[in-house]
Image (cartoon, rainbow, N blue to C red):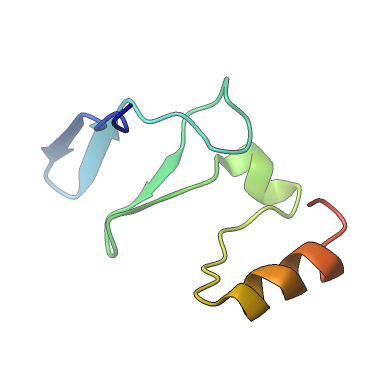
Length: 70
């Protein structure tokens, strides 16, 4: 199964998209136009959710052990 590609339409300094939030599936994700990365919705960010890139198995293990939400 291939991942779904979001539809992004740029409108000058703003954009619209159809990507859902990875944390709260009923909400729309936030698109950071500077980096092109989708962030969790504003509601999830207000609850303390954020994205972390764990590149090594050690970092992934540390996140699982030290993060209460995992």
